[in-house]
Structures are given as structure tokens and as C-alpha cells.
Amino acid sequence: MAARSNAAPIIIRKKRSRGDSAHHGGAWKVAYADFVTAMMAFFMLMWLLNATTEKQRKGLADYFSPTIPVSPVSGGGDGAFGGDNMFSEKALVMNGSGATNRHHADTKAARGSTGVETQGDDAGYFQDFTSIEAELLGRSGESAVSKKLLEHIVTRVTDEGLIVEFFATEESPLFEPETDRPTQLMRDLVRLVARSSDLVTNGIAVGGHVSARPVVVAENPVWELSSSRAEKVRALLELSGVTPERLVRVTGHADRDLVDDKPMAARNNRIEVIFLRNP
Image (tube, rainbow, N blue to C red; front, side, top):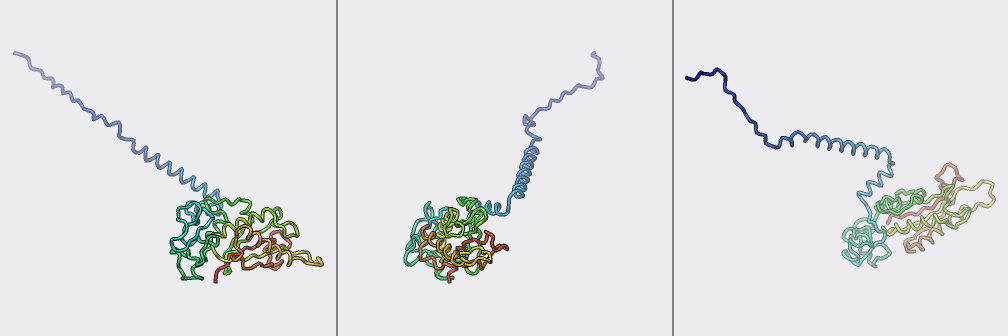
């Protein structure tokens, strides 16, 4: 008879591995990496906002939300659906910001969003000068306006219309001293405003301003000089493509409307090109 054993039986349990445990526990790393990337982008954005001027930020905003077409050349047509289409490289979209005197029809049919609107100011002529300002101040993403030209341009909208002011500095005059002979800078500025004028059909006025002369001058030439400079700009505008019919007024203001506290400062030598509000 076999002897009985008091030892407990030995039980061996084998745990089977599912084989995918290595994939668990790493999701937080992905989330953390996304968080760090977002924080880096945030701080980069804050640094860029602090390192740029208000004018530069405005230019960046306009680049991603353009307000004017790239091409400065406008189309035209004989009806609501006349002229070039909106995909042409050489024409503006026919939505009321095109149809200039360069390619217009006798009826000036391309007005407003439909081309034949007659409500509002003078049969739908444009009173919003935003597109011209953006073009002149280089706010378009495709603008070719040089920094040197921008230093001599100031715009403002008044009851009379959009005033585009070209002003001289001590280092960069608009005309040869004491003459009406324009410098290369003045010619470039005139070409710029002539090209931008295609965006609207408003009439244009030109005004000349000069700095004051010493009181001891026997014959003060300020009236003749300001008038002749304004007349010279009018002629340059026509040579640059502006039709003579749009130039409705040329005025010399002498030294009666100074913008600098010093009457003889070069900043007072300036030319104003005004896009008039239509009646």
C-alpha cells in the first residue's frame, strides 16, 4: 500500500500575451508634442506682431484678403456682360471697379454689379476710393510700389474726394529748385497715380503748393511757381494715359496752405491730385 503524501499539488498557470501591449501608453506623447508645437507657433505669432508696425500688419492682412485686382488695366464693354471675362490676365473683373475711360463705350454701360445701375450718385459712379488708396500705398500683395515712392505719398478722403498728396523732402525734391522742371521722383509718382486712376472714372483736379519765401524778396514768385508746377503735372498725367476730359481743374495755391510749422520747409512743396466726388 502506497504511502500518502501531505504535500499540496503544484499548479502552474501560463499567461498568454496578446502581443499588442507594446502599443499602449504612448498617446500622451503625441498630445504633448501637439501642445508644444502650438505653443511655439503662438509665441512666434506674438513676437511677429510685436516686431511689425501697424502699416506692415495692415499690408499682411490685405495680402490674405485682397481688395483690388492684381492688374491695373481695366476692361470695358457695351452691356452688363460685355468686355473681357473675370479670368483674363489683362482686365479687371466687371463688378463695378472696371470700365474706365480707356476702354469705355458711349453709354458707359459697365456700372455697378450689373453694369446698368442708375441709382445713387450720378448713375452709379464710384464714391469708394479704397481700391485706389490700396494701390497707391502698396497694400496689395502684388504691388510694385517702391519704398522710396511710398515715403512721398499721403492720402486722405474729404468731402471733395480722395486727395493724393505728393510731397518733397530736403533730400528728395519733386522739382528742380525754383523751377517747374520735375525730377525723376516726380515723374515716377505721376506714372503711379495715372496707372491707379484706371480703377475709377472720377474727374481729377491738380493743385500746386510751394513753401514760403523770405519777406525781403522784392518779387515773390509763389503764385506763378505753384501754378506752373500744377500745370506741368497735368501735362505729365496726360502723357501717362489719363484722358484730358477727366482733368477738370488745375490750381496754384502758392504758400497759402502750409502743412509744416516752418513756412520755408521743403515739406510745404507738394502736389495734390484729387479724385473728385461726382455730383
